[in-house]
Figure 1: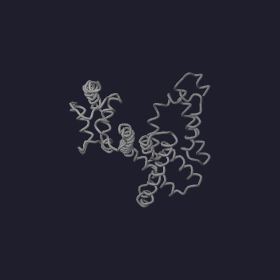
Figure 2 (figure 1 turned 60 degrees about the vertical axis):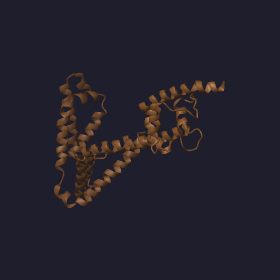
Figure 3 (figure 1 turned 90 degrees about the vertical axis):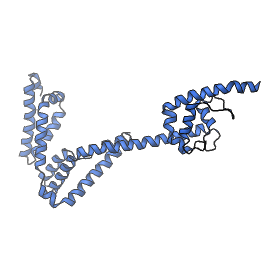
Figure 4 (figure 1 turned 45 degrees about the vertical axis):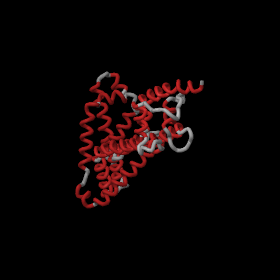
Amino acid sequence: FSVVAAARSSETFVAATLLVAIGMGVAADALGLSTTTGAFAAGVLLAGSQYRQQIEADIKPFEGILLGIFFMTAGANLDPALCVAEWPTLLSGILAFLGAKLGLLFGLGAFAFGLTRAEAIRVALLLAGGGEFAFVVFKLAEDLGLLPTRLGGLLTASVIISMSLTPLLGELAEFVGDQVERIDANQAADARADELFDVIDADGNGTIEREELRRYLLGGGGRASEGGEDGNASFAELVAQLDLNGDGVISRDELRRGYVDLVLGEQRSAALQDAAAGGAQREPHGAGGGE
């Protein structure tokens, strides 16, 4: 390829690349191996070349055509009669294959690469189908007499069918990933709500009273009084929204349900302003009583 590169001709680069691929395929066939094995070895050889990027750019127009031929050839190896005759074995094999690969990819994604559960499930489902490299391996095993022809046909059929399921697995990955993401978000929100409940529940009696909530909204700077009219509409709305059973106090479960409204919603800003206004209105009264 150094000689070809010196010519500075992309056509020559393409011709040399195709010559290597076809030549290694013919050589593999002469050695009793499949031409697919030779072409795969040529791909590995070219991928290790220092001119790899130039080769990729030059053969890009051929990529779609060659991939189409490859998959047409792989599809032609599917034996419908064998699939019908051995459908229980084929079905169980596909399910076992998908399940094993799904579990392996999910474990690697979640524990080895630090992905979230939703991300790991999406990746595992998307990649659970078979890969084209399996055709090369099965064909090589058949040529070497390591794999019976009938078993090789079943394995090839299982890979082809699993690859055809990739679009469905992609849709399933999105759906399951979204569901798991929602479950994880709810669990995280519940955990944060429990932490928040322990902070607001100053007296530790297991419930949050109105004045405890007011102190939290004021950041500890508000002064609550036992008497007095609560003229804060938004604060009263927030309390009513959190107090689902209307018993005048907020339980842990009620705070979990209204956590987003209290911490992340717009209601908190309005309630904070109203609580501060109510505290300011009562402040002169409390100070006057002290005098």
